[in-house]
Image (cartoon, rainbow, N blue to C red; front, side, top):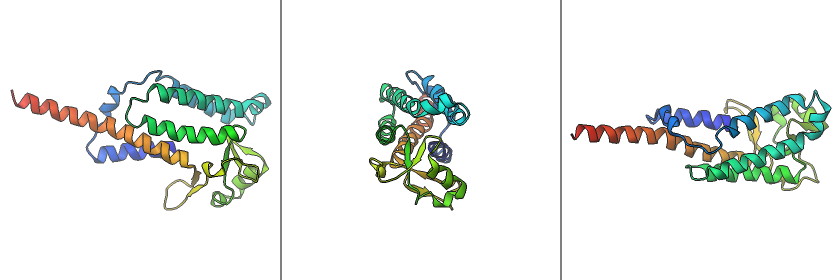
Length: 193
């Protein structure tokens, strides 16, 4: 869902006349951490069904990824939208930490995803997901919001995902439009000479 929000933010930024050149002015402390965490999460997801050691440690690895991610966001909280992103990630972290390092998913909200997904989800874990049941803590923070047609990608998301996307939207719009505004200010100053 976060990737969808980023793409939508970029498209709206272009529509508003913004520029990707604003991304060049982005200053992030520990900026290398985000791509590294993403690669680690993808590797854990791909390897947990192939290597038993990864499978047995995957929930702890997902929690560690979230902790480092939260630290990265907090270090960069001065950036527009990062506090909002932090809150969204924190909501997801809380529900995952309380439920054994897995994101609880509503079986009812997931019905449209197909029988294969439902079978895997009910059988145990799917990636970093697990079905919501009677022992799930704070299930309302899990993946309970279904997105289906006309939305282009069918999925189930959490409240934390929505909050993260709002923060990412604020951040990307600020970068794209800030460059446009700085460029306009420079042109006005130069024309006044």
